[in-house]
Image (cartoon, rainbow, N blue to C red; front, side, top):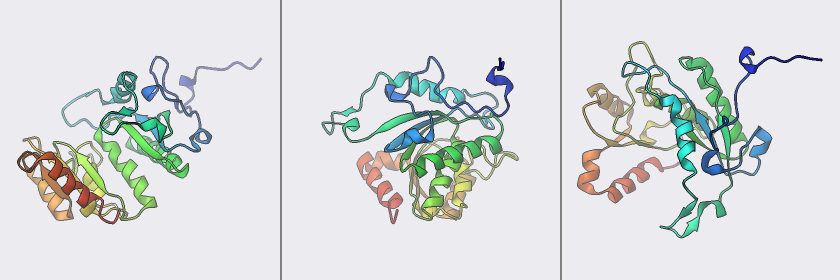
Length: 242
């Protein structure tokens, strides 16, 4: 008889499934392998990632995918505003979590890129739950490889997340857009930061947005001009030639 060991002893084992006790997103079907992605429109993935923390310790971002899935089972795909059910039109499945080694950017970002590439190669769009903000970089960068200079971004946040680095950490959660600005396949003029407000921003971040030509719509502007006019402006900027 061949005796096996728990997978925790295998350094090459990469978890993929949604963990026991955690439902799939909206209780949708679970995709076990890339062959299961055929014919899907959207593919859900979780990235339970905690990179360099910018507030001094553990911030529970690793619990994000589990939390989102757990509360999602309260919801349906029906949208009363449009009197339609999304799932009459879209085929979606949950592809589990990307393998993460918290603190290891090299390992985790490589795994994110591979997951996004697999989904895109299957002809679907990724719907990804983090994890800290740093995961935006490998996700967007991988999409931009296939559509150079034609990816637009609507970034809803209080903070610009475009700090050059946090100490010596180039890929912290406050820096993904600084790296994105310099991605050869990205056009920063198609990036819109919307809702920016509050004193956790830095002057350097505003300077960086201006330097690289990214667009900033302040929370104050949304209040003064109205949410609809602000969204229309953001879409016009982000969707240009995308």
